[in-house]
Image 1 (cartoon, rainbow, N blue to C red):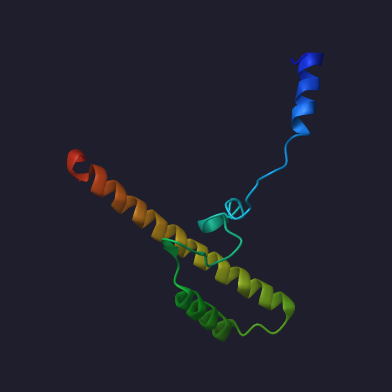
Image 2: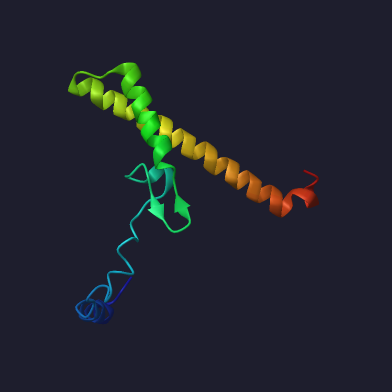
Length: 110
């Protein structure tokens, strides 16, 4: 437990906090990657996903289901999102497996 003196010091120090000095360095701190991202395509250095592949997936599902109502559109979009994220998981799993095999494969007899 903190005593009264510590509480006062904490309150005093907290008033000095002004947040980040340069937001250019912190503006992408909250980006979530892969299946946790808000966006389906993330374009950062060394992390570029295939936008054309996603556009083709969208086109194919919209052609197949031809959503007419708002509910149909939402459901079709959700199917597209789920299929895309499953593909991301599979690709990520394959990359992780290859990385593991390159690093440990020979020593473990793989």
